[in-house]
Image 1 (cartoon, one colour):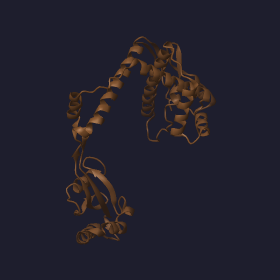
Image 2: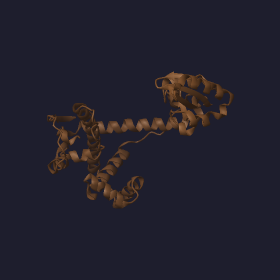
Image 3: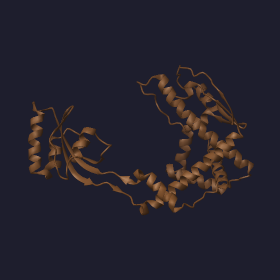
Image 4: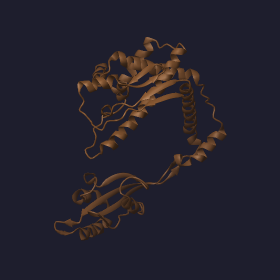
Length: 324
């Protein structure tokens, strides 16, 4: 691919967005693809509007936004190349198909066509430009469909090999539903440790009172729900020290007080869901779909790479304030 990257120095001065800045954002060219331009406005439509955190260094924030800019720009270049190839293949999108796609997108994200228009207005995108973008998408999709002949046959040996190589994808680890009571270091001026110890003694005699007593005494998570923090996996979710204690309990057991910064935690193993492995027979539909999806992605990437090899692409870095 013949690619020329023009590096424009990124200024560190971040200005408020003036009319001139908005005009520049709409018109600054960030890529030329075989003579067709991609503007900064095209890229900004795909970049979420984010405010720089007050404690984030400007250079780090700019690096983050620049990475996002490059990722979106690459996607737009791919789409432009596919659209150009579709034009060469004389692919046409009839008005009815275009209107159906607009309707589908509107229904998936907006309550009405009016809401869609309001959203586009905020982005500074006219309905005419929006329709052209969708037309490009449909033409790009059609050229991919015509150029890629997806092989849907998956042999039993392929299925089995994928299953054995990716067995962790079909394994569900053990889960536990936990309830927790957190007692602070001091309770009405007295020792929180002593209060927690006495509470454990009461709970072990009347474990079904855990939810009621959690609502009364807990200062920790989900106290209003009786301390119910839901299903927790062994290696994720909630604090590691509490997970380890929770997974050491039998169903219905109540732990000794666990001292941690800020207080004492009492844990009940409300329920246990044992780990299981999806059988090969049950996993086959998912595996077949996954293999076909990987083939499609690989063939799509090859098609785009081939187009890039024959393309003339010039990319530019935008002014820094347009990244913010």
